[in-house]
Image (tube, rainbow, N blue to C red):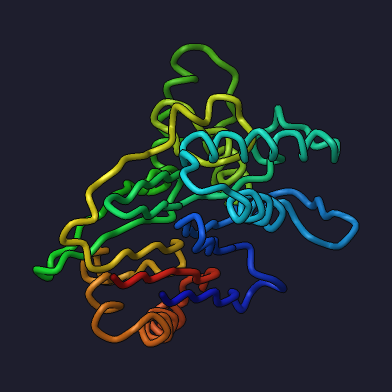
Length: 265
């Protein structure tokens, strides 16, 4: 097993976290959503860091045989309680602490997975093929958010003029209101309905050679995820991360935290 967590050059600390609980066969990647408000706790940590670390601590303590969907829901409940303890207004989407979740549990004969957001899970087979187990629900969220605003205006609901959302901060804040609703995106943010949006499943371990779990910081602007998988398989995680970082910087793209786990059977 190989794990990597490289902090964004734009951040003081990584808002990602990884889960490695070998006794329970549980492995995962967490990607805290960078806050759009100024909250910090007494130790100087923001909501993204706190959400990811809360989930990590929960999963690091699981017993053998724990069911992932139930545990994601339990951790999400803990996150809601923690926000309320810190007087966070959880009725405002962008005030919530939130994290993407991609976690697997490996037993003798099967792999169980659960996912929220855009941290992804792939498997590779002995015949050289790969399979993406999860869907990126964050992709295209700004376009879907604009469609929702237009629809709301048609229905007579009060929504600011579209010029208001030309400000990137206003657009991002509205996007956070799209969490865990129809045509929105999935994320662990303390909402009570989060279980409805968890992507989950089980598959036989037979013929699986690799498991690849990674945050969106590894998304390559010129490669699809199958090509990304092959690059990591053939050249290694750190080599790939160095290459994707160079491409992102050359294209003046934001370099995010980059976190991944690669498991070989």
